[in-house]
Image (cartoon, rainbow, N blue to C red; front, side, top):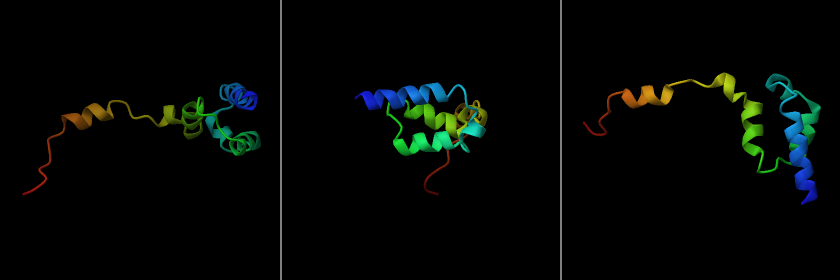
Length: 74
């Protein structure tokens, strides 16, 4: 349990200090990935490494909901 908590603390210390573009190239990040990502921070790590905030498309879901329905059968 201590090792799990220790890995979690390493990730939490790394995320705010490393920009996403640098994180993908970092040897430290690769080493931490090999050690494993605790499930408690997995979502945060995934979002950080994929740079999801920069790639987000606002209002896409609401725009798709406003589209007309496509009939399944002619």
